[in-house]
Length: 368
Image (cartoon, rainbow, N blue to C red; front, side, top):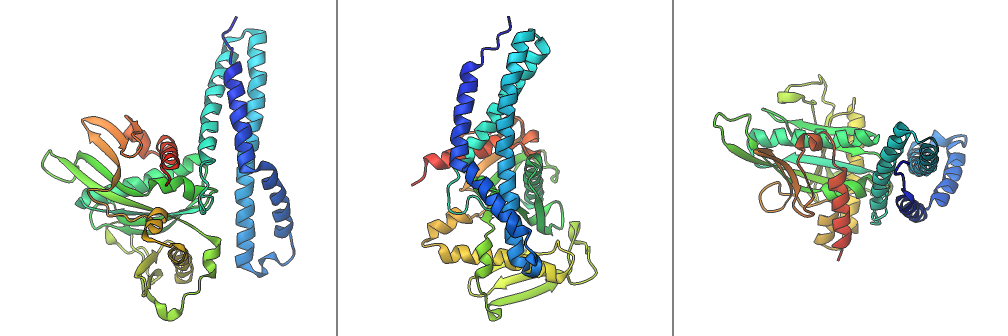
């Protein structure tokens, strides 16, 4: 007989999934999808592009969440059938398949369970992530580019759409900064635990001496809010600078002044965009992010709230949240949660789920 006594694990899986469905409101989501589909099919929907965008975006997000939940529900049912078949046939390959699928489902449901802890005001929103190089010269700008690739790969693994909004290349290696959008449900709540200073320790590939080098990069995460478009910004409060988009090494990649930098004079907030094709598109994208940041500022009652939402990142010693060691011991360690990985190559290729889940659990336990 095969040892496929998974009764307790299946029961625990089903109980956890039932709780997740209740918390996420699956029936409510499906009902709202019906209403949104009616609105999306209405004649003249795109007469108001801004309203149409809100409807189609919300519809897409709802469908994504429902599809994931229904998919897991179906896999649980299929797993039970697979286990019974393996027992009946006493077939080793089928038994192995059932064992692997059970482990995979436990992992998926664990991630969904963590998502139920995302109950903040903005947690269900898409995210805008900005990475800035800090202290460390060429190693820091190279590290910033490594982090950019890491987050884009993480999003790719999950099938989350991303859009690179702005990239400022360094004269030497890597990037000075980059801003990108992750357009997925709960992207902000999920990625917000990544906000802070990241530290890299390695033998520098840019120096002649065979010595360990430490560099830093800062990660800022803000929610992208629909209602931010309601923020009115007087033209007199904005300074607009236009310039040519640049590529690696500062080379020009555009023969026209299509890149846009907006400076909000009263607050000093600066937003740059260069990855759209035209100046008009770059200005619209920059304004959207600026409005979001200003809305957050308006809603913050104290400085601590601002730090929680957008982060106050110095990208230097003292406030780092995670260290990446690429010499001697190969290790990535989160300094808040203690979560670590001995496979930094996998982490830089987007294997972040363990760190993110640990961060969300840590934050949930340390609220207040």
